[in-house]
Length: 166
Image (tube, rainbow, N blue to C red):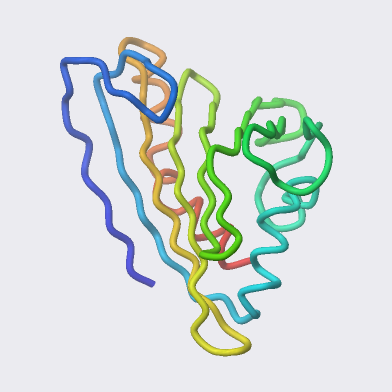
């Protein structure tokens, strides 16, 4: 399972992540890929039914607005971490291409971390596909960014791969 990533680099200016501007001093890119032993249509169906994400992602979905299958502009509110901690997560669909099996998401995580995600599914065989997960992380400057980097250091690359493997 190859993983490519760009080690943290300093950016003194503002970084644009999709539609949201935020000040950062660190950016991190991660692009894990995983082979999934299921037809691409099954995997695509799971990814585009956000109310079911808790079945394979490490999240507890609290609401989906508007409800139903994924549409551009739809927002998914979720939580992660130990049940007592309730770390808020927000996902907004920015792209859905059912023909090419491609999704785009803007994500807001705890501590001001933002993620621009591009996910694609590629059929390999009738019962197998490859899922490519490209993430651009924005980490805020200052103490919140320092805390976020310490807490999420290992998750930036391993989290997506773990979820895809499920």
